[in-house]
Length: 486
Image 1 (cartoon, rainbow, N blue to C red):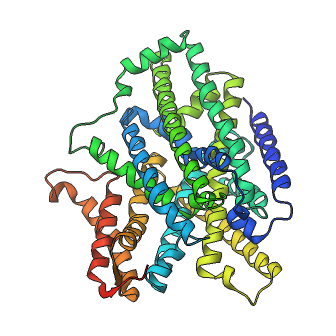
Image 2 (image 1 turned 120 degrees about the horizontal axis):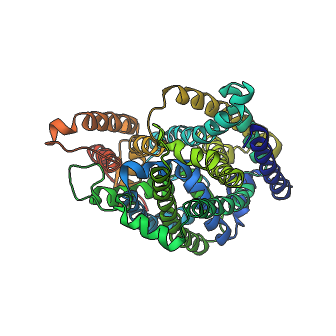
Image 3 (image 1 turned 180 degrees about the horizontal axis):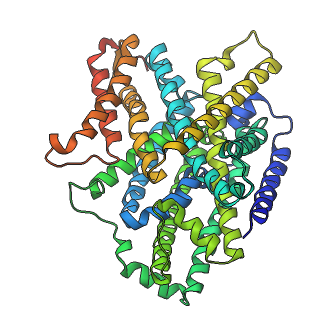
């Protein structure tokens, strides 16, 4: 498949998104941008969230990850189910009762100014890093297969991609994203199914035979019983539960879509429906990963050193032009939700939590919209810079690095919200930033020296839980006798 064909596919898909944007963003207000006028159909949000939660990282990195971790990631996914249940039954009722636009304003009500700003800061840090990792993965494919052929620098490729996202999220925000996510989820799922079908056909097998080969291979191993391992089953289950809680329930991007539903009941139906679909789709992605490695084994294809590149390499170079086109549409479909939602939620968080735009009675709607535009552009530039820097230092599977970073940046949010929900105390608010900075630093040293300190034990994704516990313990030390008002 030549670079011109790939570019045409990319531009055609982008035009489709702009058409949806044109329909959904007409007469959009600031309220529509932030929470979709609280009129989003729950089933549309649930389906679209699959694409937003998976992103290009899951689409490309998880299949490549199967070579070294088999199906052990499925234990994390099962842990997600417990986490999403907590979100639906504990966090969502709180958010709807307080009628929140930014979920971090809860920390201001519960503890005070510094706790509020600390929570919002950690979200911005987490989302900038996470969104940059996700976007890098997709933009790098476009660079390798399209723009390198025309000697266009990587920085220019990133700039083009971000400008496109900036343009179609500029007006509609959440009101637009819930519909574009739905289209993108559909194309991503079709790409997974068709990719498996193409590989199975090329090997001269039927679906039944391929399924048998996958489950008879070493790749299908799900449960790791060695407690020293980073993939130990209990670590995976616990990590999955808390990753879901922090990366969805305590994440403005994901909750912003849920808060756009008409009612709490609709939002909860959305979350439970999303959970069921999400388990199936993650299993499908792992199945695809095993299929890719079986195909490379039987066809004598050398697996690239960076296994994130295995899926695009096989799809584009070995399966023919139709399979390559299907892969690219799926990749682009997975790429856009991780970028548009991140940019919208970052704009919302900064506008509400740091600029107080929703409370500025001295500004009219047009002035608020102008400020929001400037914030939107500012974060687009920041994402551009982080992606370019990340490309220079990337050396691991993106999904692995993403969850590792989440352990450090989301841990303080977990501790703050857990303490606020389950403890009756107030805290010395001005000292909270000290605790939320010290906790990730301490976790870094625990992780670096864990094998020496804990008889060979290696921290995996459960570092998130440790980080949250340390933050919780620090807040307990800062408690005051005054009982929090409900």
